[in-house]
Image (cartoon, rainbow, N blue to C red):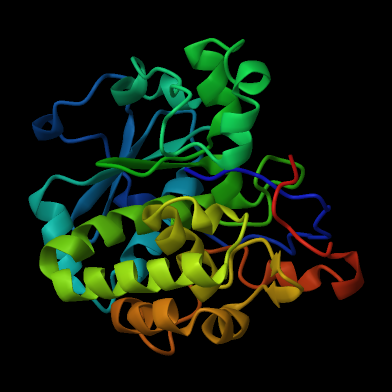
Length: 295
C-alpha cells in the first residue's frame, strides 16, 4: 500500500498510449472455477494467475497489468509457480471504484492507531487524519492499490491519466512486487534473509530516513522495485537524489544486488509501464532538499 508524501509537483506528461490492444482477445469472463463475486466481469491470465475486474474497467488496463505481472516474473519461474500454487490473484479497479468496492475487501476496517503499516506522521496525526473517517472513507482516501493474496491497482494509474492520484509512478508494479517478495521467502529463504540484512543496514545508516521505504521491510522491497524499474517518484535523502535504477544501485547496493537476481541484472523496464523514467522530466532545481513528509 502506497502513500503520497511529496512536497513538490512532478512535471510529467503522457506522450501517448501504445497503439492497439493485442491482449483484448485474451480477456474473458472469469472462470466459474474461481467462484468469484458477480462484481467481476472480465479476466485475463498472467503467468498462470488471474487478473480480474468489473465491466467498468477499460480492457487496456487489464492488458497493462498482465504485461507488468509477466515481466516482474520473467526471470523467476520458481516464484511464479509458488504464486500460482497459493492461488494468487490480481484486480484492477475502475477509476470510479474504490478499495472497498472490491468484494474481497468490503469488510475491511481502517487501521488502529498502533498498526505497523501506518507511517510516523499517520500515527502522530491519527486523531485528525484517520479517526474522523469511516472505514470506506479511509480506504477510498488511502489507497489506489493493495498487496496481498488479492493484489490490486487502479485503471487510471495503469493508463496514465493526467491529474489523477499517484500519476507519475506505477502503483500496480509496487503492489504486485509485494507478491513477488512474499513468494521469495518461500522459494529462496536465503535471498529473503539478504533483504532483511539490507533493510537493517539501510535503517541503521538512514538510507531512506523518513521515506516510505523505511516503514516496513515489505515497503522497502516495493519502493526499491519501483526505483529498479524506473517508475517511482524521486526521493531526496540527506541531499542524495534517487530517481532511477543507477541512483538506486549506488544508494542501496545491498538491496539492488538481490533485485538483480530476482528481476534480472539488466532488466530495468517493465512492459506495459507507462511511467518509465517519467521522474527524469522533473528539473533538478524543482526537487526539495528532502522528500520525506514533514509533520
